[in-house]
Image 1 (cartoon, rainbow, N blue to C red):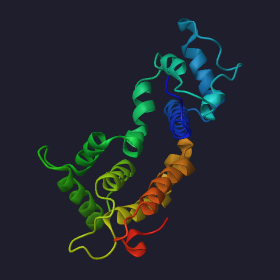
Image 2 (image 1 turned 90 degrees about the vertical axis):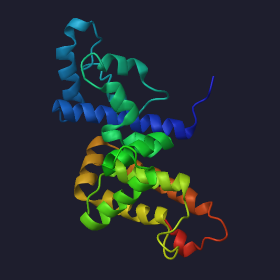
Image 3 (image 1 turned 120 degrees about the vertical axis):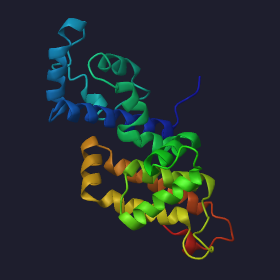
Length: 224
């Protein structure tokens, strides 16, 4: 049986915390206690154990888990819609953008860029850059997806004629600005994962910088 690594555990914690707060917000509850009361009111006929007095949900809000919380996901799916999807993909596909593989990341990029179905990922990528530079339009998942796609496929490639900062560092810099905007700060903070998402992105960037080849200068590679 495969053991759970620290990285895996970190992902599980963030998925769990974000899901519980997403459900709380969707239900209009201001705290775990209120959500527990709402669940107990709906679960009387389902034979559920008490949620309010036992404070059973609290540990999930705190991310106090050692494995994927399969049992509570199954229970919550009986009351709330899209629980499994939100847990695995994240609110607005946040976890897919941050941890997904290339095909899933490419899908987010193409969808957010609204390019033609037959367009390549690179064409969609260029449109995302253009939309942001010209119109200032962005979404957090699409920007993370672009950043991760570049880190994986072209971590040290540069714009245009090859001069100046690399594309990955440029989108990382914009991503850091996006994370500081009021709307994104508020959204991720309400989900309880604001600092952790920043740390995950910074960890990816540190690895990219630390692995730079000799022909990439520290200036164009950037810094965290």
